Amino acid sequence: MGLAVLQDVRIMIDLTHTEIGIAARIVHQASLLSKRIQNEMVVTTLTKEDHSPVTVADFAVQAFLGYSLSKAFPEDPMVAEENSKFLSDKEGKSILKLVTQSLGPIVPGVTGDDVCNWIDHGGQSPSERFWTLDPIDGTKGFLRGGQYAIALALLVNGKVQIGILGCPNLDGGVLVVAARKQGCWKATLSDPQTFHQLQVSECSDPHQAQIACSFESSHTNVTQLDGLTATLGVKTEPVKMDSQAKYVLLAEGNGDLLFRLVSPQTPEYTENIWDHAAGSLVLEEAGGQITDLTGKTLDFSAGKRLVHNHGVLASNGHLHTIALAALTRNSTPI
Image (cartoon, rainbow, N blue to C red; front, side, top):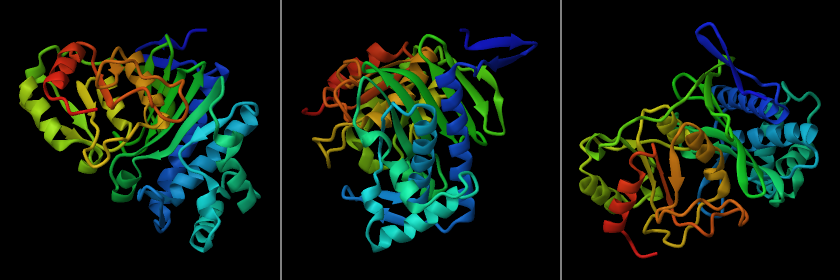
């Protein structure tokens, strides 16, 4: 089944494919939910064991997508960033109440128990076929009014088959849909039926390249990034952006290189699959390339983390070999 058909000068995506259509629809709804929470509710946060924040929006989006996936694909587990254990103590119960209230307009009759069950839908364990979700990728960006993404991907036998990114604060709000061997497509949240195809840039001169990196300095290696910029001869300052919205930047040709470097503060850190699964397919289907910092293919078959990989390098494809060589010259011990 073709993913897109041409109508006059507008390209429309065919959402009749069951998984693609449902995933696109529910990420669109979740994106609107996150914006409503951001605009209407007092932002209350919990601090997780890794000291990262989690908000009402994180839990509400995950609960909504868990609910939606359980209805559409009851046999498919959902492997996602959050779990309901954070909602069991006194502070958590106050957030659970807000999450339940936020879901009321779109899931009438929802209870706190429903919310917890949906957050944990499928037992959170990878299987032969499962969905992986980051409900609010870039929670700090969400809190400061910057970039964040709802990132949903379908994995089958360790390969990403569908990747959906909802980016409510990017270009006025966008929905990006990628399916393996069927391209990468972008629509606005205000018109989620009209898509145009994305294509990476043709830049092959590193001096002209635009680098994207994490907004938070604690999420990268600033010294190594400076060395890479100098080695490549890049003339512009890196674009600092939260979340997998950076993958959209590269997919639409507004960036050329993305370095997910390992912070010296957490040298043993391994990436979570939900932080890259959707974005990796978005980039690849737009013509780009993604590996780890040593050139290895990202291995999504090993569980919840990319334990066989070290960091991430994403590019428009034309600059990938050059960037890997620069990484070798500016390497840090693994």
